[in-house]
Image 1 (spheres, rainbow, N blue to C red):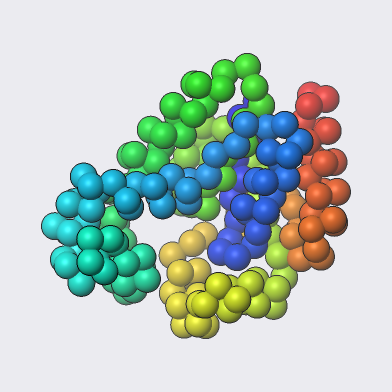
Image 2 (cartoon, helix red, strand yellow; image 1 turned 30 degrees about the horizontal axis):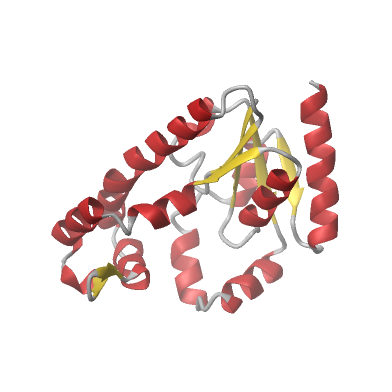
Length: 191
């Protein structure tokens, strides 16, 4: 079975993914793939051509500068997605093929936005109370305007909840989240 995890910014998708890994699932994160891609020379060249040297700090891509550029321009955001998304989905597909016969959990923040939800057997949406989310994002150094800009480019979590097979509320601490993940995992394995 191949399961996708999605959710809004700061809801704790990565925490949920790690719990699935501890339960024996093969796991992969689209965010981790993007992080690796941004270090590749061929990708740096493409991003430099599309966005200019101002998104670099020395020879490395400055993720905050790149984020400012793409979240202020729909056109620029789509340009970056056109560079990265094909590689992300190729990596995920390779991972799935390499782990045939295992249960796989894939974390994809823009699952519904990219239309890739159709590729997965089940979808889990991770949510959290807005105050909890804002505190997590502040702890990561994001200001409220930056959060607002990023959220404006994502499908509202309420819509993701409607489209999901399962929902995990990650508002009340790791143990409560673990209980929810374990319950869903047991249910999935029994099917």
